[in-house]
Amino acid sequence: MTKAQNGAIDIGNGLGAFLQAEGSWGYSNAGLVWDSGEALLVDTLFDRELTARMLSEFRRLAPVDEIGTVVNTHANGDHCWGNGLLPNAEIVATKAAAEEMSQVSPAGMRAFLESFDADDPVARYLDAVFGSFDFDDNEVRLPTRCFDGSLTLDVGTKRVELHSVGPAHTLGDLIVYVRDSGTLFTGDIVFVDSHPIVWAGPVSGWIAACDEILSLDVDLIVPGHGPLAGRRHVEMMREYLCYVEREAFVRHEAGMTIREAARDISLSRFERWGEAERIVANVAAVYRELEGGDQTADYTGLTREMACLAEELGLYGLAALAANPKCGGPQA
Ligand SMILES: [Zn+2]
Image (cartoon, rainbow, N blue to C red; front, side, top):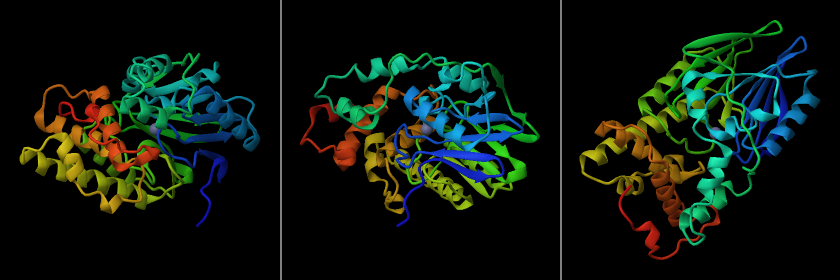
């Protein structure tokens, strides 16, 4: 088995990728485009320390004095909460992502993590997946330039295309396409080796985003999480989303709750992927669409349901506690 690539690597043509082989919750990738002394960074990382490490590795890799532009692919903290380490850069995101970024902060995350009793399965789960990140003293820089649709930026003589493809994973996802090099940075539209999570949806929007990627001439994909990828990984992502959408629909018709459907849908085709508890959030996204009304995810409720399923499945070293009363409450 080959060792997973980790850290900053040169992917050719004046492009770099910073890969976090762990790939799980919060361990995201970033990218760098450089030319003629200019540089554009695709995403920062979940906290300041990780981002500082990424920046110093990129500075060793590329002949760049200063990164003039940061593109945030979406509003999840693992893609933008290191923005504060680039105080002079222009920060670009879609309008929808910028709006979403203004609503969640590292301090809010810290308060959320601390809001559960220590014996609550949610506290144990959150500690297992987020316990190694530092959410203290981090003032996040919000986007300084926002757009809808598409935007083309110049980095030296290189052209970098930003295409809005949300709402899908979040409300304001974008992809970063370096057409001349056939390279695409997808943010969390593509997860490799882990289950995707539909925070915003609609699922159909994410499937359309996969179709847009598949319509591009692309040789190399830097996914939001996981190792370097190609077209077949996008096809797998699309297949998963279509499968979950279909299977959740059938179970909604049959009157199953989200909790029941999430446990009834076979994930054997995707058993090598991590973070299987995300099926709860993905079923919930399909149910919201089918039921209409408020399309905002109940983050706290979903986190509790994912915590309980993770415990049941024994993920992250969490042992299932028999008849845990906090996992038997009202249906999500
Ligand atoms: Zn992410």
